[in-house]
Image 1 (cartoon, rainbow over the protein chains, first blue to last red):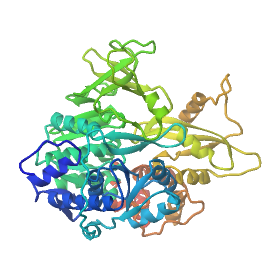
Image 2: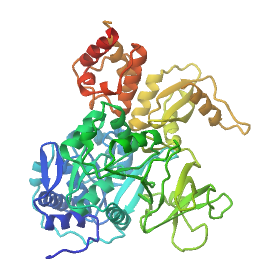
Image 3: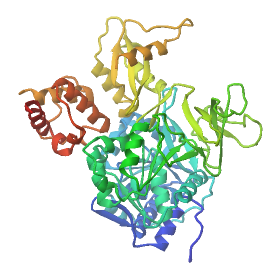
Image 4: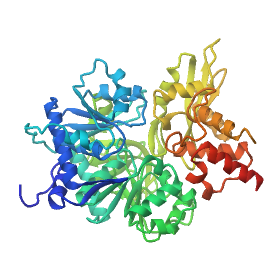
Length: 519
Length: 82
């Protein structure tokens, strides 16, 4: 094909960048620099190997490995092969990773040796045809794959591009299905909204199983800019993160607020290191205003953006911080992105007026295709327009908001037991189910205590079976074998019995009050 | 103050690695990245402040002070004497 063409599927961004700018660095990770031509070649090799292994259009390819050039090539390779990728948290315990791989019937697994070995016992009986190993940066292994003569399928924009698993209230994670069209609605919006340029240098802070990564990967590829994955040990300390930004002259940063707060509070941050920032975007949780004020003062040259949206819709509202408010009230989540229709509906079914509380609904081409293998959950989440205006389904967020006179929304809270901790969404029911799974535990309730830096901290109240003894450390260990680290309760409180409401339910409100008072 | 390292080691084992009575962390093992994520690092800072009754300035949370148990011991002792 000659000349440029309009990207129609997500991986076309890479193919187009490789045509236009083959020798430009696509990914820089430590000493490793991969150009667009190389990244596209690696992705094509992987796609060929996937097709050879029997992957067909619509199949799932699991990716269970740390960030590397090879991992990024694998995401593109899966899509080139007509499949969708399923990124699994490389910090996730094998039990949960295994559940995800079996739940969506992963056909090929891309992993490094260590992750592949830990997952193997969980995949017995599963129809995984092949494991592609990506040790180190994996490029040698991929280049060594035989050149495949197999032709790649032509996909459609309604095909799934990826499935992202989020916490599920019933104790099992659920897979959010996003199509190429869904993803590109967001990518195209973000590209235009920020005015991204080909010389932009993007951080990649969020892990690939977190939807913030969709911006990093594909907005960068659309701009034909350069992506700089933030190494784990760098991301964990504020001083190291600032050094990283300075060393690579990052221009576009996107992360959860807690990552920015680390940078503001640890290591005596040096504003000179952050002078390259053009855009600083945060999403995933509320950015406490006092810290935001500190950030704005530190990097006056950068434009600050508060983006909002659940995984099911990706970003659907945005707010540009022109001025940090004088009060410490949280800033708004903002107004609908182009191509989205966000509206709040009151408890009695009307559209919420100015200042009135309502649940946020989202309609538009970014809204997910549904939950993998869970038609009932999909039907609960994707509903008919409650205001009866449009025929296509609306996503019911569960978030309570209030609109202001300018059409901008303020976030008020949740209508259920879902909370955020460090930007991750956690269903307290999933944590409770993991605690309950311990043999010695008779009763358990997990509550979330608001915390300035984390969003929420988790506290588990448990009652042990008579005659059985169990330590707090043992309970935490048990949970950590089932759930990612951010879902492990910070403290375990033992009780003789849990308080009950008049209807006989566990009185979570009084437990939350009790836990909050202890802090 | 000879037990600075052992106290922190026990804290890391029980509160971060969830290993009972474990001696999981060696004196010269890299903590940041290997043992500590950012949340655990905050927990560790709070623990040290309480246990050893010192104030840790934000500027002091650096790889030089927090990289290994040996580094932490040196830092805690210096702060206690200050």
